[in-house]
Length: 368
Image (cartoon, rainbow, N blue to C red; front, side):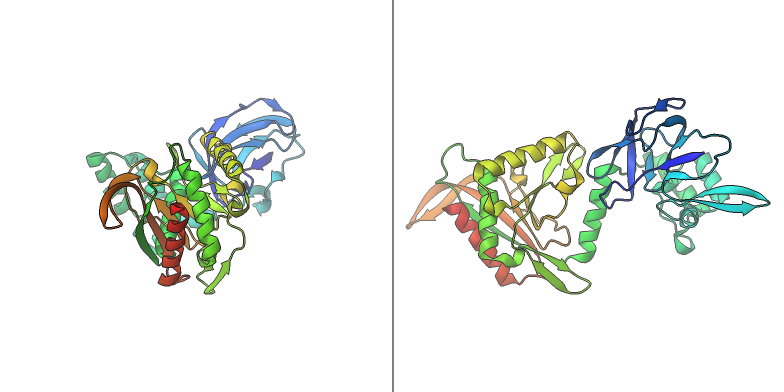
């Protein structure tokens, strides 16, 4: 048999979730015909067939997670052709005079088996209805023990079974954990008086332009930081990640070269990115390479925040809810529209003075 394995989808992510099969066992398919739609942490990707042939077996059902390099589809072959793969590697080993197929998959089988415990533990988990993928093992080298399974089963009976994170939310959890482990964050908060803005001002675009202006004034925050080598790379071009909230989770597409584009071009570019995010058709390349990030959470709620930096970036700007408040003007009190701002920066890569000057430049740009 020939096996088509889940290919590297070009995102550096180790897994995907099956959304929908477009073929069934017994179907005859052509080269490049779409076999399955899978959901990664960033997009829904259609996986084409690498060859023409007849489908003998489909590995996994909708909702299952499959790792890069694991078998996805089995093709029927002639009787005298019982080895080889279309994608990936298939090793042949001799066992008692016969040959056995062994898959090389994204995670080593031995480590998977060690983490999931012994066959007895796996059998216990099946009997008690415990999903081993949701457990952290307390045994040696993280091995799941019978006690771990029984404890989880007791919790399930009392509070219901946990729902494993999938797709975007799983990647978001990993990214947040990475940030917590690697970044030394400090947050500055300040207000920008925008009472002079005309009615109908495109608030997001004003923010984008203000970030570009602040980066040009203080380029130290438009940078990447390598914590292992204690080195930073300051960028000439400003590629802004713009947080987009969806029902599936948080996406951060990248608006490229914001310092050298017109307002209309930036608005159209952001509209296109958001449309692609909502359709889950955004190319992975459009979610990578941001040099800093903007979170306009004020469209929903909240004044100030401590936005989370995604390494290797060193800064993220947050904009809160615009509100009227009293301000002092030439010795008298007036009510103006005010935008609250939050700037989180990695203190390993930038000084407090650099961050404060960036915030000042941001406010000045918004106050023009």
